[in-house]
Image 1 (tube, rainbow, N blue to C red):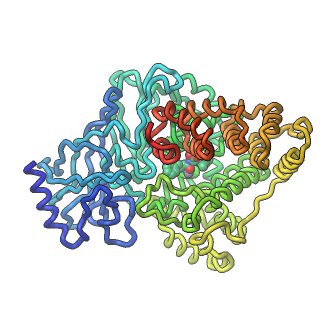
Image 2 (cartoon, protein in one colour; image 1 turned 30 degrees about the vertical axis):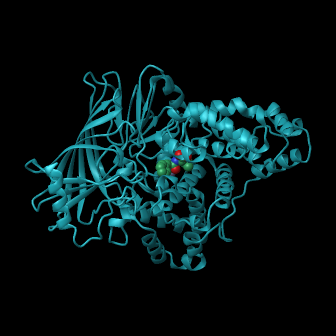
Image 3 (cartoon, rainbow, N blue to C red; image 1 turned 90 degrees about the vertical axis):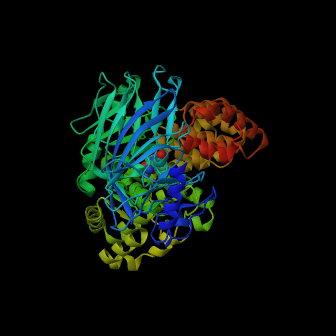
Length: 620
Ligand code: BES
Ligand code: ZN
């Protein structure tokens, strides 16, 4: 207690040039910050003292649902810096020492904000080079999901997985949790002997006797790319630089589905320059993983719902791989600049897909994106429809996802205006020149103006970056295959019988487009389609989710068992969110949704729980 009082006095003394820190539980990070370009979602003050390297020594305790151990942070600071400020969320801090020397440090943990957590302010001395923090995560840590064996493929062993993007790293590592700060890291991780640990780093490929694993990430990364998974995992190589980790019973299917990965890496390199991260491996997670994929460096995390059996959803690998350039190499400086990660990556994903599978194929995927973005834009307030979005005070994990396809279309417009060759040269130079650095929207605009002034003159970039909707000069992808699908949907809607639909050789993308092209139909007609195509039994998660959404809109209730199965056997937020939203629109469906959520909630990752709580209500 005495130490705490001392720390308060000391911090109060050195805080005199900054705005007074709020002590309410809703204190938002930006309240403390002075510099204009600061990240509104982090309490840290990297301009004063910045983390350069993190050494972790962690024990994974499944019974307690806890990571505990030490984080050794090496810092670089201004000569007169008096404090190192870190982000934490739900961490219990046992002890902080100053390095070198190990003298106890004076520190203060601020009251917790439900979204941003608590600033940890550590008083440092002129000779301080780092701090060592003894800590433990809370069982409810927002980045972590602790799975019971029943929720894994093998059903025998527990599983731990993390998801740090956007601001959840702070719930398992005390750090400067902003994409504007990069650090190298190493880790020692102690796990139960029958499990393997992997991270977004150099990884082991098999278990060892001790259950102690060492990791090293020599390239500097932002905190949102910190990742860990622990489970009954095995590895299978594709070639010398890439392979896949999965539970044993999933490994064969995963290896088959993703066998084109080495070629995809080559394709990506041929477009935008060398892959800079050493290995590129995949990790197939249990179905509760809240995202389709997460671009953790060296080890992309994946939902098993992309294993369709026919490689039809591997553009998701193209997407996560593309992040190795857009995002992991050139990184959005704050979450307001999120489009610089996701818009670029979605564009790059489509380019990889075009090169690998042909233009006709990639145009279909572009068009699926256009359908999606139009629907999303229609539901958003104008201020949230721009590429640059002001997210100050809001949870960046709930940011609009329109920036994916709108950003991609913007880059396609720039490509079409500049000409492909010149545009690709521009992008190669962009990645090369800004590698391992943060990028702000104004800095990108300036770089674009300087590099391609004539292009900027022809394209109204302001309307794209700062304006609502899809500007009138938006490119219009074209697909004859999709035009044929639309004609079939139209004929059916005008009362043609289901048997007459010409669907020979339809890919899953054509099926999705067919479903999305249907108007609201009477339940009986939906049943006719279901009879013919068996959509509700589809093993393709994109087809199934499109069909379930359409069915709810149409009041076609026969799909209820399929809805229940889908909502209780996977936890990917992109699939959960629209289905729960649609169900909540009518009282009868809402009762059904609540009943399912009461059962399913415990099996979802905290990221999905947080989103669905706001849709269905948290009182489960
Ligand atoms: N980086 C994102 C996932 C993400 C975004 C996590 C924001 C947390 C906050 C990842 O690359 C992604 O975009 N995943 C998509 C798949 C993609 C093919 C659109 C997903 O999960 O659906
Ligand atoms: Zn992405």
